[in-house]
Length: 330
Image (cartoon, rainbow, N blue to C red; front, side, top):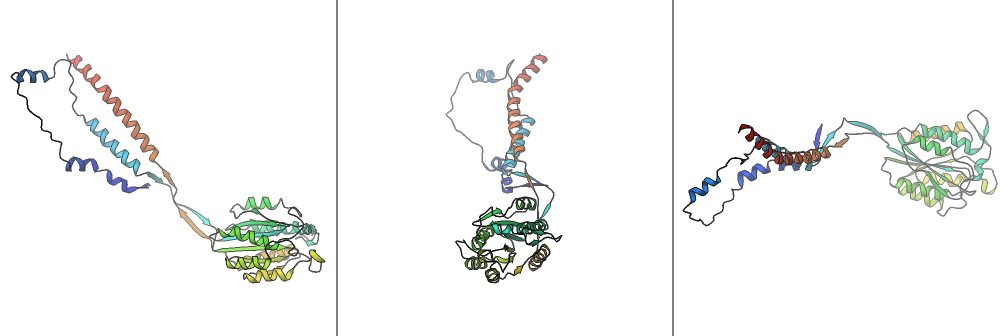
């Protein structure tokens, strides 16, 4: 379907006719000179042998009209509308916060087949399946240890997110745990989101030991920005010192944002937790429809230039053709 980006430019099409109709022809009065030999002068103005009189041709008029139409059409920016296309727009953005401190290499996590795995390996397997099923969401990934990093920004490319998730190793971000900084970084990533639901799922096996932003303050800022925080504890609550998971802090962070707190000791439980969180935020995907626009102004501009060159060539060649015709008649 043909359309124009600036259709008002087409109002200039009848402009030459309006000028011809409304603007009077130029009239000029000049002093007259009386000549006694006026008849001889006028006889000299008559075309003689070899002279060529060029009447206005229909081809010239047609070219002039066509050139004006092409120039006006180019200004109107013609476009060809393709067939309608539809895609599903994500209605939910989910940032996943994963603890990759050194303690995540502890082999006390029970896998789906009953084998004991390192905590990070078990979490990664469940997360991989969770991301793979996010067909209508935009997942992102924040990892943290002694510092927090955005490993995967919010993306519709779940395959890329899963590939980067597979590269994680315990201790690669340091040995400490920065819960508050991880939440703050996730809030920054979600700040530009226009999704109906903005969610963060924070998974940790320790207590906050090095954050510049206190976990309680980070949770309060998340609540102010409309981010729901769900927390999951995967560590041992009976461990000593810094290796002990801080259940009270994780519960308080989730409660401050209207989220939920969970404990996971095996892959089955962790999978059920993610499913329950999924049910708390039902997907309301939006179908977005549009028609692609393909510009055509380069073709009309090219045709205009080609016709100008053609008209110039005809103007040069027509006198030569008329002289040849007259010589043939003579």
